[in-house]
Image 1 (cartoon, one colour):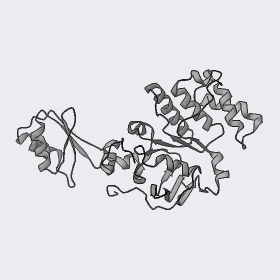
Image 2 (tube, rainbow, N blue to C red):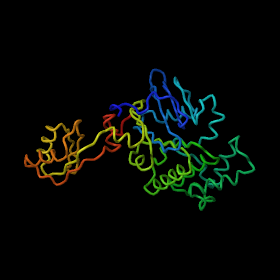
Image 3 (cartoon, rainbow, N blue to C red):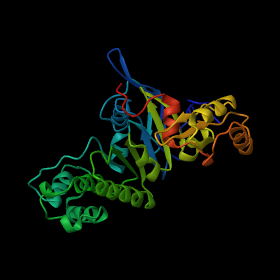
Image 4 (cartoon, helix red, strand yellow):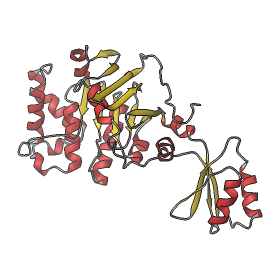
Length: 326
């Protein structure tokens, strides 16, 4: 198991199973380093969550991956090809939605996608109308194809943006904050769409600061903090690296906290009065913990040993919540 703060697979060579790979990727603006020598590995066929607080360098990394800004140092490979030198061959296989979709509000969904497709020099004009219709059907917008976009909900606009990224067959889809600003219904719509795309074999790279969303849709993730990757791997690996935790529910929280501290468990008190802390290594068996609590007169109403959540792992790695600005 990797030490706390280490990145799973850091320093590993580029693999044929990687949809995205970087080595030492960095970006500096003057004296300010925004992305600091990251080694990113995104397995083909995964739904990969790219996590971090606002200002952590996620969007700058995406812009470098897509060739929108030049890297200051390091290497990039997309779908097995070096970037940006092979961009003309690789990018037609990559769909992207970066910093939200932009549409002409008084045009219909169909008309907006036709305009977008017309700007793609690799797209055949003869099959344009059919491709647009297929993309709208794929994201569940066929019923609104002729409706003006100004009448679309936020969730529908976000799905229309994804449809634009899917006008031609894509092996990799890059989505930057795809549920940002959406209501619960819109969020569910986008979540369902991402799952369906992954089921169809597309690798989906999702940048987000919403941990709950990532846990529901992703198979793998990387956590960014001030321009660096502090951990990456499958979600199970990320949770397991945090170690098992113990949760105690009791009306005698102060006494219970002292007992747990003596056992090497640094508990935190939640708003509901529950104590939660990481078990040490080696850890006392659960029965010993309960016996120690009861021996001190603690009334134990609930006791559980559980794996770390992704949010707990993030806080342990960064010491920060998701409101951090770089």
